[in-house]
Length: 414
Length: 172
Figure 1 (cartoon, rainbow over the protein chains, first blue to last red):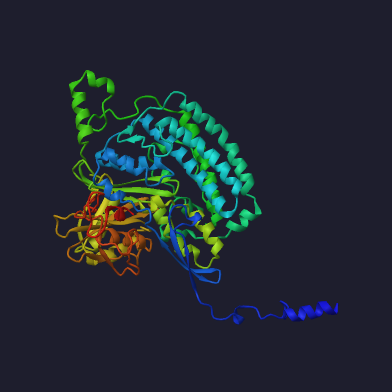
Figure 2 (tube, rainbow over the protein chains, first blue to last red):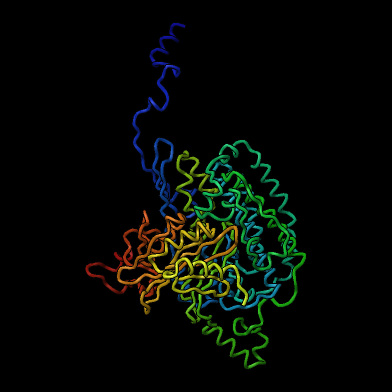
């Protein structure tokens, strides 16, 4: 006993006697910490300069632009049809949605009608992209927060969607499947069966995922109440997509301004209350289920008919016509050599990407190329709110918050 | 011709800011107004407070080298409740293009205006943090200006020599 007491005295006063609390703390000096550009949780190349007071973040400055590729400048050098291949390289996790966003701006400018079958194919491809993007988000955000096994499940399920991309367009990611006035190809034989198998298998897989995370106490502790933003603040910060909806703002482009015939589909827009990371997680899982609902309806009610407009000034004539019709040859030559021209004017067209509102502001000077193509990337707008969200949280929460914003730096930097 | 709510919005702006409203257009359902640079903040404040345009979508610019003033600066805002949009445009002239910043009205304009400064070299008066965002801080020139050539980067081929440097040294 005596020995123990002596040993304790040598250790100094116990925790009860230690001066503790803010009034006893010495003046602290803020430390600057570089997170990134090669931090695994930055998903792309992002550098965040954190100002730390101990382990509490006082301020943050996101340094973006590492993936800036000048797509907006490149658009100005390419015809409208050529520009499609740029669009899917921006947000590389949801290329079909970028494709549709880009051509919808051109279609709005030149006023061309898209046949119902093309619209349905676009909806199918977009919802597939939404599911695969959210799956990837689930996997990588889980990975950041320590759910290693979830990553493999998410990757397995996402691959099913990529298989469908490949079977349709020949490419797993950069689909470039849209054309102005429709889509490039009709659905191949057996594709709808493959899609049906995907729709059938996914709900159980999402249940699996949810059983692992939704009621997991560690998942709750890492996400609940972390990075919360109120509805008014979210609107002021300009965030969009699941981040905005998690704060309780019911705004989804598909409902508010239906495009591609989204008004015909019966689906709900999940809306959260707390605006924290956990709500953003719930939004994305719920959105995947809604996407599957839309996919099922699209498969059941897929219209027949042409998949691209018959307007020969915009769309290539079918191959079979080239040997019979001189006019078709002329149209083919004109379209391939110089493309079509748009009227003078400027339009803004937007779609709902997995990250939020993806907009294209297109200025035309009457030539066959965009005079100016401004992209409104949802990742850029969401990432802007990071500074506000991380003030006062712990360093470890920065990872959770960055994950919950779901930004793609390729989309952000363009 | 029927009067849509947006038409009356332009009328209301015109009544209130008669001298500032240069022109307005409705192209493919997109409403835009061109405002004198000096009155942009006032009009923006009015649109936000009185007309409910609470959500800033983006800010950017368009370069028209042949025109004077050369740049058109664009902000687009939306009213989430009324589901309407309006594009606010103003102009900036060379050699020192600058327009008022709208970050005091819509804080979300912060990064968008930084990007416009970065890529077009248009200054936003009253912006608290105007520095390059996409390009490195040391970058020279403004890439989205029309006189900035897309593929104009000097390239040194292996059979060429740069003063004092062997080709292999250049290639690294």
